[in-house]
Image (cartoon, rainbow, N blue to C red; front, top):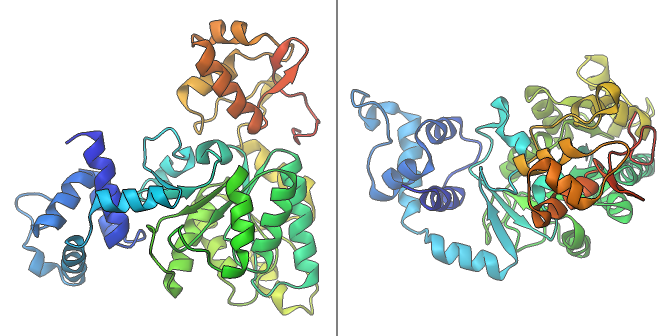
Length: 386
C-alpha cells in the first residue's frame, strides 16, 4: 500500500477511534495505519503474529476493536475530506511537510494518527519556536493580565503561543499573542464549529495568520473526555508549557502532567496565597515539577536551550523540527549575511525553494534581512536570543 492509502487510513481512524488509545497507537506504529484500517473495515482480527490468541480472548481490547469496526462502515474518506475542504480544513499526517517535528520524538510517536488544521499558517513552521500557555477558565484579573503580558512578550520575540482556546487564561493568551505575532489553538472538536461559541471571532482572527488544530474530524462535537485528550497535544507541540493559573482540579494540571511525561520544560507562575486559582501552580512548584517564572525573560531562558536558536559561537543548531531543505538553508547563513542567490548556491537548493525556506526561518526568528541579503539573527535582539 502506498502513502496515499496510509494517509486515507489515518483520516478514517480519526473518525472512529480515540487518539489516546495506547493499544491502537502501538498497533499503528508497528504495522502502519493502512493494514490496521483494512482489518477494521473488513471485520477481520487486528493485525499481529500468526500465533496470537483469537481476538475474543483479548477482553476489553476486543470490545474496543469490535466497536471501532462497527463504526468504520459509516466512514467515507472521500466524503470526509471533501466536507473538510469545504470548511477550510486540511489533514496533516506524519511525513507531510507541515507535520510538526516534535510529534515524531520517541515519546510523541504515538500521539496522533494525524491532525486536522484550519488557518493560513504552516503548522510545522508555527511550532518551530513555540511555548504553550495554559490556565484556568475562571481566571482572575491577575491571571488574565499575566497571561497577556507573557504571551505578548513571547510573540514579540517570534515565539508562537499555543493554548486550548477556552475562556479565561487561554483566551487572554491567544488574544495577546495574535496582537503581537501568531498563535495556535488546539481544540477538542471538529474545526467546522467554534467551541466555545463566544470565541468564534477570535478563532477567525487566528486563522488569518496562525492555525487551529484538532485530532477530531469535522462534525464532531466535544465531549468532556476530549478536553483532557487534547491537552497532550498542547504539551507536545512545544518545548515548554507555562501554567499561569490553576485551581486544585484544573484541566491545566492535566496539561502539566503531559508536559512532564513528554519531558518538556514545565513552568508555573506564582499567585496570591489566598487565591484558589493559584493552588495548582503552587503545588507544581512545591513538588518540584515546575520552574517558577514571573516574566517573559524567565520563560525564554527556560526554553531557549531547547528551541534550536543558538549554541556555541552564535551558530544556530540545525533543529530536528526543520525540514531538510530548510535546515540546509539555515546552515548556509552567516552572521555577516549573503544574498539569496548565494544562500541558494551554498545550500545546494534552487532559488524558489530557498526563498520559501528563508521566509519560514524568518517567521521562526532564525533568520533576518540585512543590507547584504539574509543573515543569522544577532544576540540579545528583539527575538529574545540570549
